[in-house]
Length: 126
Image (cartoon, rainbow, N blue to C red):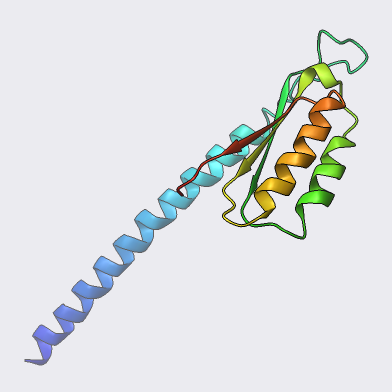
């Protein structure tokens, strides 16, 4: 009886040791891949902000839902972004169900009249 328990303990120990060994191999693989890719530190190409042809087109999406106290400040600040107007598009994704929809629409219309490319996109059901 005592001998079978000893063999059982040795078997459990061996299985645990084998699992730890394979886990260590997986960690070693991760380390080797990390160190290999770290040496290939590639820097993203930079574009010249002074050349209008190199400036990328940017879309800013503002998801909002019943933001009564935030919308006016948000739209005022997003309109102050220093980026070429021809390369900037702003989308207000409005799922509001309260009266802020009308205030937001009025503010967006005023910003559109000032030359900002801003759209008010609404959906009725979420």
